[in-house]
Image (cartoon, rainbow, N blue to C red; front, side, top):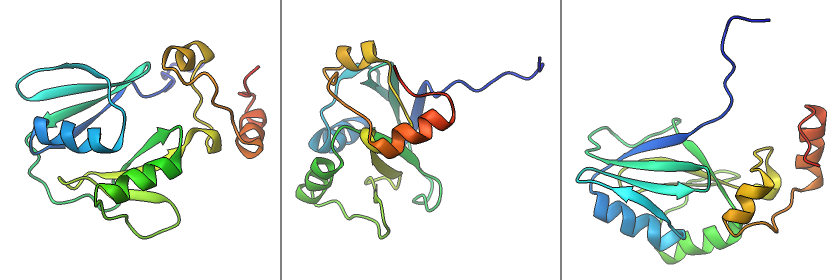
Length: 148
């Protein structure tokens, strides 16, 4: 048995933004948001058993390679919402964009990636009908992680 700890997952991501109110308005124009709580300089957006923390005070240049991947139930609906909000999509094969503060966000669809929420968490989120593609299931099976 190894004495080193195993990484199990990500509890949350913290994004620095210019303004909490502006960030909530921006992300709320694209995604359905459930606010967990907020303070003077922070807001917490629930994603089932995970969350994003928005922290006011970003001062660095826009992200280039540093990014985070956000899993959604419908990638094409996300693309339409981004376009309707006038957000510039970054070039490439995926669905990437920068928020107004330079945070690089990569959007992936739940059905297409290995990331898996427990069934009871999906039900609690109102997303109990989401399924995985055969390719994602094959990747999960290969690692002994396929659901069911």
